[in-house]
Length: 111
Length: 112
Image (cartoon, rainbow over all chains, first blue to last red; front, side, top):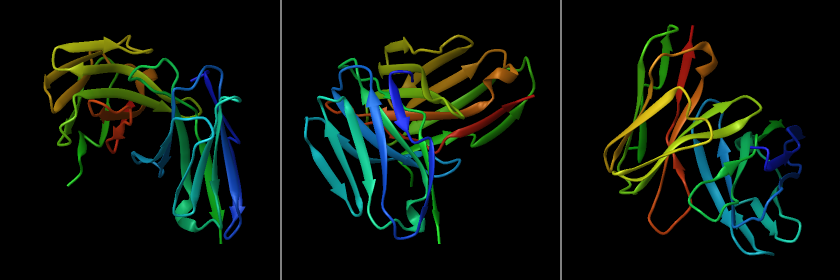
């Protein structure tokens, strides 16, 4: 959606290196959701952030929410081939039960 | 077994044909959604349903219709398919007090 901008659109990282993806909203964030999609497959829920300053981690993936900037970042430490895929952010910007989604960031991990 | 299933997984059809995509879930969730995904555009909401008697249009509902046959089943129909509707279609569900959505594996549709 135009309300959510993801950057970069794509990135290539060497295995073992770190990477960061950003998701910026033009509207107030009531909740921010990160998903991972393997090519041609469904979206897998990674984590949800709701409060400003909140930070969550799952294995080597960490997501943070900057409420003032209306932005979230997803950071992967020591990337592995299993981290390759498309990462999408979804946001509750209307304080209801619908989510708006960014266009996604394609991550390629090179051995 | 997958909690959210979609059938068919792949479909090729011709312009003008009527086609139905089906979604079933065993998660017991009340809310169900249909999205389409196009390269560079992310996910766009087509229709959503908060319970069996509640159907709502999303941002791109023109050319589509839906049916919520039961709490667990939500179908998307293309009354007269056009090439512009070629896309990857996803069904999703969410539970009563949560806004987290869980997605099916998707249906890849090609309209010739």
